[in-house]
Amino acid sequence: MPKIATMVPVRSQWAGARQWKIDLPASLSPSGKRQRFFFETKQDAINFSDEQRTRLGNFGTVGITGLSPSELEQAAMAFAAIKPYLVSLNEVVKDWVARRAARDTTVTFAVGFDQYQDYIATKKVKGRPVSDSYRSQIKQTFPRFPSLHNLPLTEIDGKKIAGDMVTMTPATKNALLRVLSAFFAWCGQTPREWIKTNPAAKVPRESLSAGEVRIYTPKEVKRLLAVAPDDLKPHFLFGLFAGIRPEELERLQWEHVNVEEKHIEMPAAITKTATRRVVTIDPTLSAWLEWFISRKGIQQGNVTPLKNLRRRLRSTRKAAKVQAIQDGARHSYASYWLAINKDEHRLRENLGHRSSDELWDHYNRACTEKEARKFWAIAPPAKKQKKIVAFKQEVAA
Image (cartoon, rainbow, N blue to C red):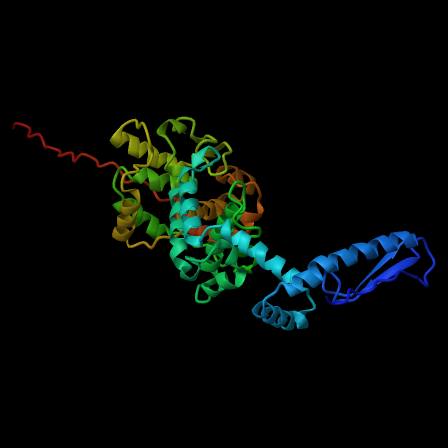
């Protein structure tokens, strides 16, 4: 039987309460590194020494003699491999076991993303379902990351995510990272706890220049209103001349529109921010509403017809030869309104903004006052006058 190492307590040269010490060389230390232990009394040091002899007897002599030649060879190779990193074999094994245990309790990216889409389909945000546009954005995100599909979530890191984004534009990259960040955060929540950290959070976002706000010109607005079907005209009118968001227009009811008192009540249940606001009906919109009601009568129900809405809006823009601009109607309203009225506080109330910074950053100087006057001068078609034929009465001689 191999000789058991002798560990004799010695008095430390340092004065203090713990005057007795025992040195364990790296070959005998449980951590695989040289360790020094201090004790208040010699007996405490002797007790510790006895415990170490017992440990070495159980796990040193017996353990090593119980290893096969192949296992001894593998252990030697393992020690050689980790030697440059100054870690113990025990630390490496614990780390591997922990990662393996995490892998066994997680799911693949594909499985997790499929469950996330099911969750989003039933999720409520401020009492309302998640918008179709955001659900569509989530659906379009999955195929953009093919290298992640079959990977366990615990094996996905920022480098792998960034690898699939090399050819993407900065705007696209930022948009997809927002979706991925929300997805991975959901994966880490109870009761799933599939991951410990959010790998998307480590991928840097691109810096985007503010750019110019794109708005519709008065000529484009005229063409849109000229070709828009009658049932779609209110959708364009409330967007262009009241700045109501597209998703809010889909929830707006005619009962919210008070033509006589010239305001539109936007209940919290239909606004994006879930905050009630009242939008003033300006003279241009008022004239259009009077014209519309004179032709179609008092309206009820939805302001915007929802059936095939996206397709019909595209067809209308195509017929008008007008390119789609994201939030173009709302941006046009804000830009033209601010150019004429110069009242940021009232405009902020109409738009439902909580800060005036966005107004001045995006809409101030977005158009000239001359162009704004042309915009607000857009009037509904004039009523057709019946042709009156005058007859000359002959006077008898």
